[in-house]
Image (cartoon, rainbow, N blue to C red; front, top):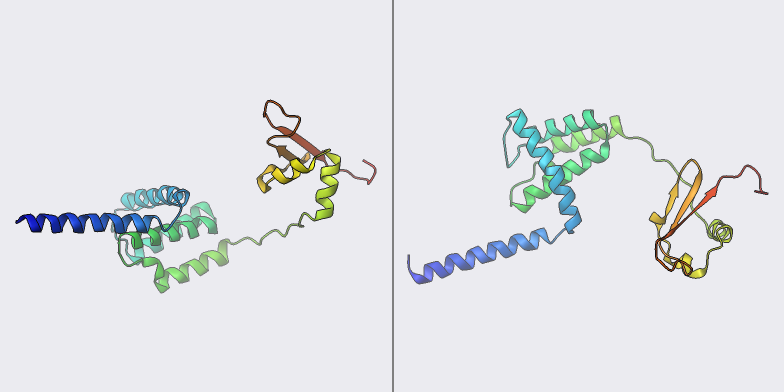
Length: 186
């Protein structure tokens, strides 16, 4: 092997590493973290069944999705597994079994059997938000810092978590509970 051949191998290796990094960069790091956990579950499952390893075939994926559907009874878990298996196959340049008609058919069957109707929630209108802020004596600066995850619904009512407020000198946060009323004069 000549020096030029070694340089060629290094260049190809570097190009392959860069291509893999770009493919990994196609999804956010937290997405890959979730995918890694779900893919580990898939690997453990097919290792315990002694089925074909990677790249997975359509039958293996079909059996895995059916197993998840009946054990977890969650369409979201099955959809995550399908996305993960497809993503890992694409990442390695393999044909993804998830695009096969058999997998699409089993996904439809899983959705029909295990889907639950979505619960329609009433939106929080501007009027409701103003009333809440009036009852908790919130300032404008409190309002602009609120995010969706600062609102929690519980049996007691609505819990609003203010991470920081003007009078919160130690930045420990403040939780306000607005209880449900049975009359308008609460």
